[in-house]
Image (tube, rainbow, N blue to C red; front, side):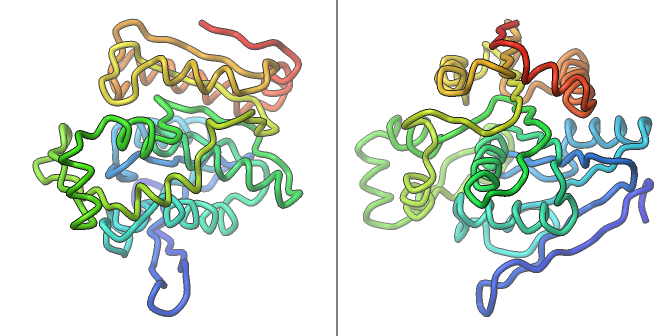
Length: 273
């Protein structure tokens, strides 16, 4: 027990692919609020901890975890793909938040959250209560990586299978694999309508160098009008970790986690704030 949370582990995969996923659970009332972090981020990041403090103050059940190859979880980052991290997320949801959770997806976590919601519908399971997406990076491996890569970088990936990209957020480079790119193509969502069966609130900075705000418009155009909200922050960056940004996030989470408010979002029309 640390700061009122319990460290749990969920085993995902079988045989040589088996790995233990580290999960921190704060007990409270449901529906569960679940944090899905970004690419190379971990569950101790600023926004995740802010939501944890919110959950503690409100007595809410809150679940956060590290994907394979991230933070306290097992696995080699360079060997992981979107499908790997989706499998992690779905295992954590099944173990700790099986009933209509509120999913908060940051950057890549927004893609994972949308894939998980889509899969719920495909399996005939209840949809999440709602999604709060922060600079959601749906299809980023193709639209924001491969399509932007130079011919030299593409050749390196095709010949060597991996390219080391200098990170703006950490001293060590990100290992980008060709397997990640190819798997991303199998998980694309922005090639058609995107009906996730629940309300969606997107928070997007207009000074985001990693996921430019027009990307959020592409997502907005594919979501149903009812229950969809896009909040644009004119001076917001990719992380949206400033106090004023975190305050907007917590307000969106509080609204989504209140059943009556979530229902009113479904009944309403698409909004851009």
